[in-house]
Length: 151
Image 1: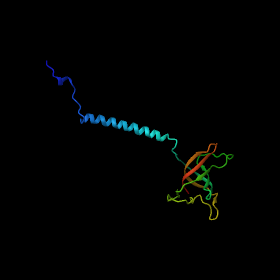
Image 2: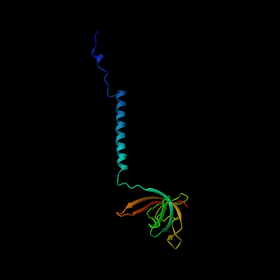
Image 3: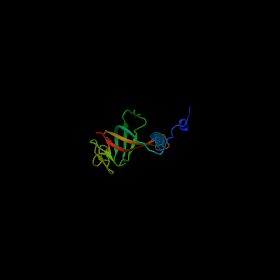
Image 4: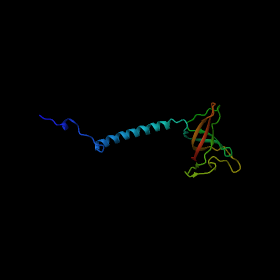
């Protein structure tokens, strides 16, 4: 029985063959997935990225001049010996109870006092997007970057 050289050698894969294109495509997709996944993990753990926390609760005191509020989040037990938790309202944009957004440096209407009094002791339900900043001591500085009046 005679054998020819072509019988023992597998067929040559040309650069444009369908099988080779599939292999290259799969390797490319896997490499892209690894790069994107690693990038996502890096961004998620970046200590220089500020992330807000959404809180819903009641404002018990507000001062439109200082833009400070006393806020108690739902489900949070308040220790009477520790006093109120004060938040700074730094939002340039806020949302009223109907869902309308207000831009500029206006103060949220649900937090405002009377015509000649910037202080309000009315209790109002709000949703806040806040940042908590460490100042080196035991107290955190609470900063509301968005306010949504709920009533």
